Image (tube, rainbow, N blue to C red; front, side):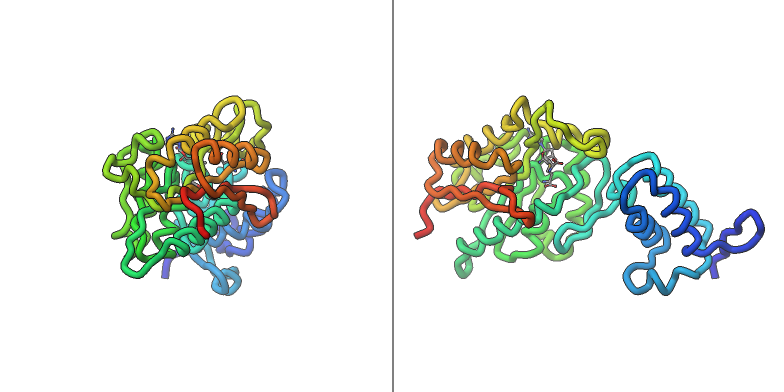
Length: 302
Ligand code: SAM
Ligand code: GLN
């Protein structure tokens, strides 16, 4: 039995008491302090799901108390919950996340759905498809594709060596699918892609930076997430212009580009894709129904 931490009166402290303390402390920081408190307790206690409630009256260990205190203090100072926990769910994956990478967003899960639909359309028996996730950050998009589809080899790229270190750690936790994933040397967009892939990529997918420099981002995003993952010139389109413009020469004849964007950029990016020579260009929506991606195909589907 691990010794329980004592409170100043000499009595043991339960997780339930810490949950109440965290909820009080976080009320000024977030409008859902109960949710954040629960996630912090789950992480500190290791009690997830049904075990969370069952373990609430267990005595807190010294180590658990220290972990709790550190996480609560960081969250109290405004750090996003995802960085404080150090892990965040994306589709089926439980990804390591820290300040080296963008926190994976729910809207990006929809972008993965669009990419998977294209892979399914291109699939033939015994055909191995090549997918490249440009600007992979935590690895969210590319690792999900590798985990959710066989017959696909995935290359992850990023300009940031720090981000690739996080992607590498997440790749290590992927299991069997990891054998089908490669991580490129750090480099800017297509400069990071080995020359042998030119004209041979079946799916290019990217959630690049697309925020305009003077955009009003929520403080929690602007103050904590890497600016190199967010901002892309005066209209937010600098990186999308480069990616869309160079994509055709890297794609196979029936290859597809899927890019995430902000809703107000969809028409402009669709126009860029047509101008770059893509034959079929569609706009995809996220779960809230807002334009969130462009799917551009080099050849017609019918
Ligand atoms: N793909 C991840 C996701 O969806 O959660 C991260 C997306 S984040 C919006 C953009 C990523 O692009 C960051 O990891 C950033 O380091 C990378 N990036 C920014 N500029 C780049 C460039 N010029 N070349 C390659 N990657 C770049
Ligand atoms: N969705 C992010 C935000 O506005 C932006 C991500 C990006 O630039 N790709 O918070």
